[in-house]
Amino acid sequence: MKNKKIVFANQKGGVGKSTLCILFANYLAYKRKPVCIIDTDLQKTILMQRQKDAEIYKGVEEPYSVQDFDVSEPALMQQLMDSASQVEGFVLFDSPGNVSEDGLVPLFANADYIVCPYEYEEKTLDSTGTFVQVINTLKAHSPEMKAELFFVPNRIDPRFGTFEEQRMWGQTNDIFQQIGRVTPMVNSRATLKRINTFELLATQREAVKGAFEYMIKRMK
Image (cartoon, rainbow, N blue to C red; front, top):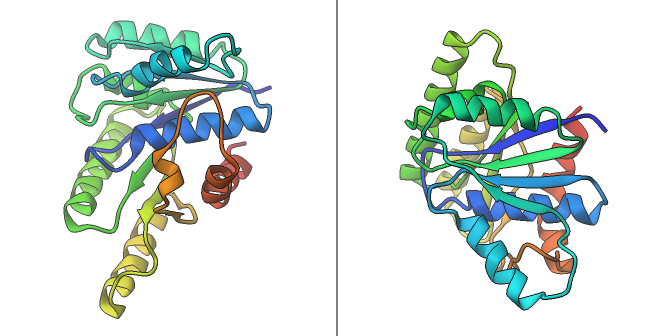
């Protein structure tokens, strides 16, 4: 299977970046696709989740590997990306919330896809806009950068929002659609707060199916 390097990123913390990365890995594993996660987030959220899950699921084979890596050294990050390019299947990267880390340049420059979750909330949209500017600047200085962007409206409760707010949501999607691809929404559901790195519940699968199938079909 062709190698695909996918980075989950946003300048704004708390938008569900690590959660979405785990869910995507679980979804790919459920579909029997080869997948692994490399946790470059300074908080090591996914690595710690796997360590906790390994105690609970003792004796159960891991559905995919989770490794961590320090993003502070650009040269080492380039080596990591070169090695990741030799891996068959999907290699997912959870990136730090602060995109100013020097080591992130090789991460983004060598990615095939960048997945950017966002919420319809003013501060999040401002930070997402800043993130897009960073990516555009990187592209201008790195002609070899070919990453396609997927924007994921995440943790959305469609029951809320005034007419004016929902109109703003549509306008936001239209703007992001000019830069990359906007996936179907991932709605806010209690089941998505109960994730682990070993199994995907049927309710979780249903919640993310629209967005993830959209992404998989377009990741050539």
